[in-house]
Length: 176
Image (tube, rainbow, N blue to C red; front, side):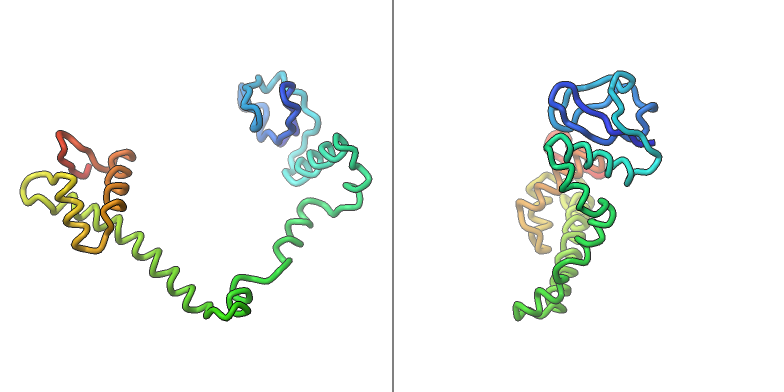
């Protein structure tokens, strides 16, 4: 179930999914929290596209553009038209004199390197420092010897700790 609801604070209209399942909803514009049972439902439908279309019609009416809106295709049709418009990436690159296959290969190399940086930092936490848990400097040195920039290593190490995959105690790190 989808409902088009409005904020009584800033007049923002938005779609609320399953309005009966949540106790409250937050306005995306002013971030005011509303009790969903008290929100005025301007339109309800089981079809998301129908709710989107109704919201668009309400916004057009609010702006005094109902006639113009009536001339425009349905939202779902506009999405299809937008996807078909213009040229694709390959055509654009080739028209610019750039080899699209080289660009694709470079993108794959970048993705592989990004993944391997993460693995190298994990390996550094496991291996650097010998029998002791390694320090940040030991991890950075280990990773740098394998082509990972210092700043990238620090960022990845911090991320591992933040998401709970590694821990730091007294300047020493370990994987969890």
